[in-house]
Amino acid sequence: MMNEYEIKQEMCEIGKRVYNRGMVAANDGNFSVKLNEHEYLCTPTGVSKGFMTPDYICKIDANGNIIQANKDFKPSSEMKMHLRVYRERPDVKAVVHAHPLYATSFAIAGIPLTQPIMPEAIITLGSVPIAEYGTPSTDEIPDAISKYLQSYDAVLLENHGALTFADSLLSAYHKMESVEFYAQLLYQSKMLGGPKELSPEQVNVLYGLRSKFGMTGKHPADIID
Image 1 (cartoon, rainbow, N blue to C red):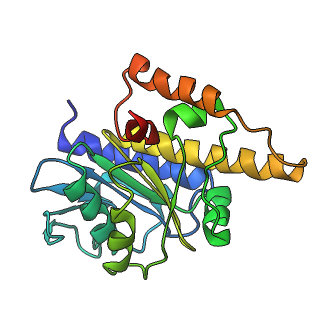
Image 2: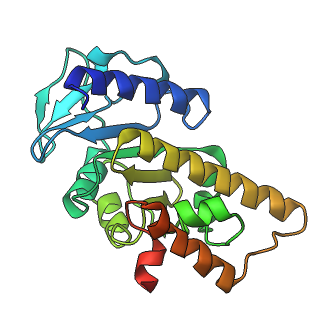
């Protein structure tokens, strides 16, 4: 098990990955890790996630109050959204919010990622709904995502970006990569005349593989089961 400093280091590494893959611009994006029921680490507001060091990372309580933050660093203003996920999904240990180009384009266009086009995306995500638009840093976004938290591990934020969550920071980040790859494939296949979708029978077989693989988290397959 990683200690707190090692978790901060991992958050900085994930920040570099998110930034270098173009999933955020400038100071955009934020992510967090649950230490226990009362303490959370989170990225600061107003800094590039690609250039953080461990001393940038803030610690807050379950109400968003600052426990520890170095001078000039304040917790992300989006932590209300993160804390709602933790409150309603006790299994979640980390949350990632980013603005990946293709996924965010679908969010801006108001198009959810629901077409079954790729086995890996179906097994990992199932589909990705869109939460209604909310003003950043307010309770509007937490309220909008709440209806999707019990059935999905990823959600698009209308005119905003994407949100993923999992039982580890690396898993939450990987889900963000999967969302973006799914969106890019869907977009490019549409440019080629439209994707050939998998049949409902094929989708159900793929859904069944989740339990065989021992995959954790929430998924549309759980609704069917």
